[in-house]
Length: 204
Image (cartoon, rainbow, N blue to C red; front, side, top):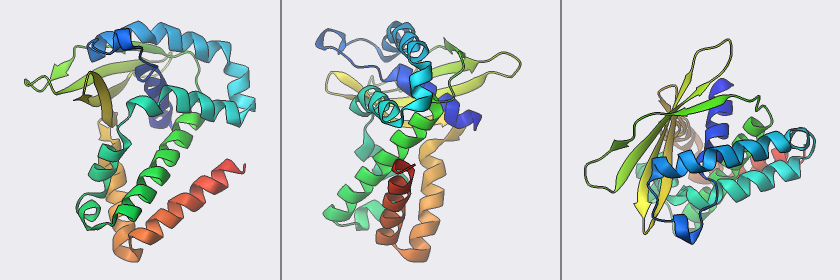
């Protein structure tokens, strides 16, 4: 539970909308500059976040989607099955997986309780094309939760392609789970299951 909360909270902070003027800002500087703005938005809308699901989804859609590379994440999650998939299967999986993550983050935002986010030194790949934005979510009465966001340069912007919470990679975690389901029932069955889960969640 705390991993979902941590991932959802930092996702909203990290992926606050970029303006053209901010496009070339280093990823850690971008996180630092947008943290206060996003935290204020969460605090100001705390009651509405818990009572209006449509508002929660819109908030996540506005803050998260533009700066996550869902196709790259989908390729990594499916592994060899991505290469075996048809174009239609790939599109369907990306859409279903994106909705799953949006709903996960939306649920996490509902449980936001004023945790403090502290940024740690940035890790770079030495080529300037990939970085890891490191941070901790500190909460009263409990240990700090380490969060790592792996990002790649996409043009003049940076895109998130994996998130690790407490040392657990989102991509690795889903890859293991989805691989088992594909082996049992096939990719189409997995996509159908994700679509059903998303539909059921949206009707609550």
